[in-house]
Image (cartoon, rainbow, N blue to C red):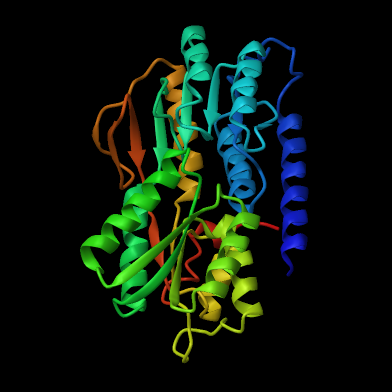
Length: 347
């Protein structure tokens, strides 16, 4: 399937979910649910890839299971200023709680300050703030994910060579932390591997261009690390194919690839042998636990540091706390695991 078709399908699915969310809640100016349900909303960075589209569906399901009135999601379209406006608008609509995937970890502070002043709890998902208050962040360990990626790729490359690192958005904590985990590990464990880093802002077009430029001008590059297969992998595969370097593992000329996320396309490429490993996010757990935490926060609860009852740990996270869910390493040996979100995604 071409990248353009995949993008159209993702947008269509997201549009359908916007309609579903709108149908689940009351009118935007109703001033709260008349039937006593908690009115909540989701502020998204974007809904441009299957990771985000799938999370919308899972979060809607988790909200419905707790009988929330879910307002239509807001899409910041990768604009930090718009996300601040989105949250302010939701507060004006009288929400009782907000889910948010933070786009810019520092810039979001004014919106979070307004929510705190209004007494509206916010649960961050996937990426939290470095400034401003949230009840809790539910996320992966981005530094560990980068380190896991380094270890898998370093082994696949035989401990030597040159790797292209396609970074995420370095204005956000996830992009910074995944890159830190990867590079710290490379320096410590694989000193004979040179890292060539290129930021992409999670944009497939930028990832594709960077891959094309680096591979075309530096034939010594013999490995690729992606901070997100959801956002970057289709273009990388396309470039390798165009350059005649798309070779499955076990055959001469294979370029090892390791990524983070675990998208359906990423799992397909693991099965095909073109991707050596992915670090799959626990996306279903992100949704169900976020809904649980928001319900408890709206009821006035706070959360303690330490181990949880769902195989994770709540830790101090700057000014806030975070429930850290460790990603699942995926190779050909476990790629068909039905609990992986990439195997559960619809569409």
